[in-house]
Amino acid sequence: MTSTRSISLGINAGEMVQSQYISRFSVPYDATFTASIRLKLQDKFDSKLNFPVLVLFFDDDEWIQALHTGDCLKSKSLAKYELNSNLRGDGEWNNWETYEIPHVAKNQVWYVVVSDCAGVTHMAYPQLPYIDVELHMLNSGSEFSHEEYGVMTLYIILFLVYVYFLATTSYKIIVSALRRDEIENAIVGCVFAIYMELLHIVAQIIHMILYSQNGKGFFLLDLISTVLQMNSQITIVGILILIAFGWEIIDVDFTKDNKFMFLGGAIIVFHT
Image (cartoon, rainbow, N blue to C red; front, side, top):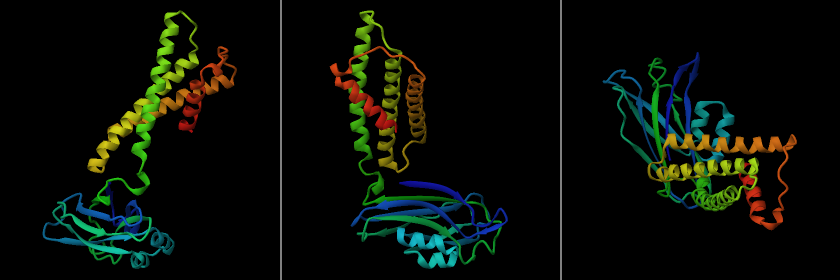
């Protein structure tokens, strides 16, 4: 996973900010957690100077304690690991710095913080520009955190299920239209919702394939996927509201075709 953030240490909105949370990443028992980080000033400040900052790593136990201390130095003392890093005054990226934790002792969530608790940098230079941080974390070489395991498999299974139901339902609607049978609008709306959900799943699968390669995926695909899912949910909710207000549906004996019952249940479960 790759996380990019812009942070400010020092005077911010009239308050002294000495540390900034960057990201979190979970790894399972006995896995290897690898974190690489680089930093740069957003603007050139002084090419002759370097500014020291600390990168702190907390596991979930220490993180809870650190949140309750309310003091930067006390929180720093709770960090499991520290990386010393230097910001270049010329506004260029510093070299990637990597820390590896082999064979973690248990299922853990790791939290990464950039800190200047001692104030060495920002007390001396309170007007220092914002800092760009790029953090790349791996779970035994995989871009996916432990929390994301199995999500790709789930999307592939859902894709196959939705393709099957969309194909069979569309076929029946076409056959009914050719026979000049009455087609219920609610069924057409459900087919539209399934189609939107299917496109959402396709976009998510492509996004996750890219994510597995670069740790970022493709933001536009992720955004389109969310919009498609919202359209699908709005359609289903709209149909249910209309039915609740008395919209009559053709009397269909669903016991003759249990696929409709399964499809309805699947749509409701997935949308909830």
